[in-house]
Image 1 (cartoon, rainbow, N blue to C red):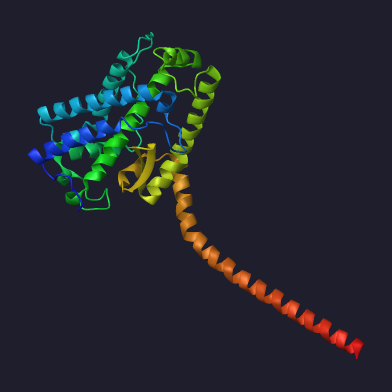
Image 2: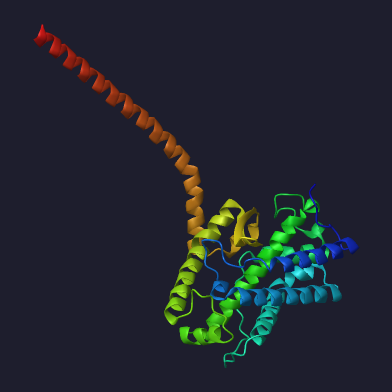
Length: 312
C-alpha cells in the first residue's frame, strides 16, 4: 500500500515531518561514501566530518521550518523570498559547520554564492513540509500532487541535505582560494578524506570538479531539461547514490544562456532529423545490399558457365 504525503497543514502533516527527520537522521549513520561516477565537493571530507556537516544542515533546516511556520508565511511570499531564504540558510549552516573547526582565517564569509542545482526542487520540498502537497504546482511532477508518495518527499529531503552540504563545502573551498589554505583547513581536526591528503591530490580533485561543473552547466543541465527529468542524490546503505525523477519546469528555459540554447536546439533537431535520416540510410543500405547480391549472383553464374564450357 502506497503511503501518501499529507495534503494540508494539520497534525498529520506535523507527524509526517517528525517521522521524516527521524528516518533521515538514522540514515546518516549509513556509509556516506560517494558511490557514484560523479565528483562532489563533500568527497574531500572524511565520513565523520560529512556526518557532522549533514547533522548541522538537519538542525538548521529544522530551525528554518519552525521560523517559517512561526511567521505564518504564505505560499506566494515563499516563492518570492525563495533565494533569500536559501542564502540565509546556507550562510547559517556554513557558520555552524565552521564552528566545529578550530581553524580560523581572515576571509569574509558573507558573500555566499548560491548555485543550488535543482533549486526549484528545494522550493517544492519546503512547500511540502510547510503547506502540504495541495500547494504543489500540478505541472511539475508526473502525478497528482494530492497523491504525492511519502517516499517522493523523502527523496527530495535527502537530495536537499546532500546538495546543501556540497554547496557549503564548495563555498568554503572558493573562499580559502588556494590549495595550501585548503590543506590547512582540512588538516585541522583531521577532516581529510584519505584520498586527498596532499596538495597535489587536492589540486587534481578541484580541477576534476571544475571540469565536471562546466559539463554539468552546458550539457547535462540542458539535457535534463529537454528530457524533463532531474538527477537527485540519495543516502543509502551502499553510500551516496543518484537517481532520476520526472519533472517539468518550463520557467528554467528563460535562464538558459546562449550555449545552452544552441545545445537545446541541437537536441531538438537531432530528435527530429535522425529518425528520418535513419530510415533513408536503411533504405539505401537495402538497395546497396540488393545490388551487391545481384552482382555476386551473376558473377558466380558466369563462373559456373565458364567452368562448364571448358570442362565440356
